[in-house]
Image 1 (tube, rainbow, N blue to C red):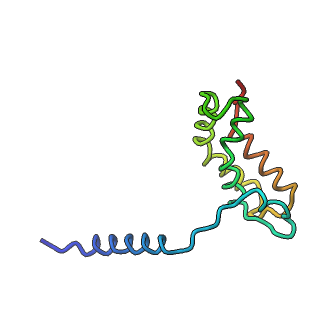
Image 2: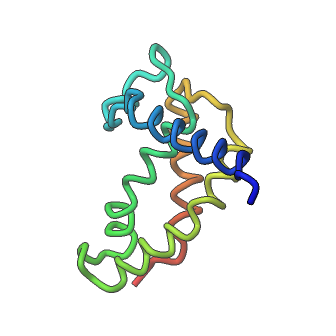
Image 3: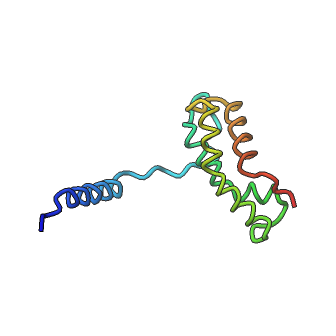
Amino acid sequence: MKFPTVTVILVLAALAFVLWDQTREQPQAVDASRFTNLQANPVKLSTTVDWLNTQLPSLCEQATGKAKGADANAACIKQAKTRTSTCRRSVYGGFPSVVASDAVFRDVSITLINCLVQDASP
């Protein structure tokens, strides 16, 4: 039987990647204060979109008018999570890669929220 050289190399490369990924520095969590002075301290569009996605429970609570444990709120969050990749693509295609003003941040936020939280009224 022939030794599976290619398979061994691929497995070792995958293992090396996993080990490298575990040892690199993890990005710090972003909070709302990061978006206060965008002209002096611009933010990547991907960071903005990621932060807005972390706000889904709060957004759905506001959209449905129901508390976190309610069925309508859970349905809103579930629907928003299924739309995440589609909404990301539409935002990435329609906005600059760096958010450097309050107006752009507002437009990105409104566009993403309208895409993620659709028809969530009770």
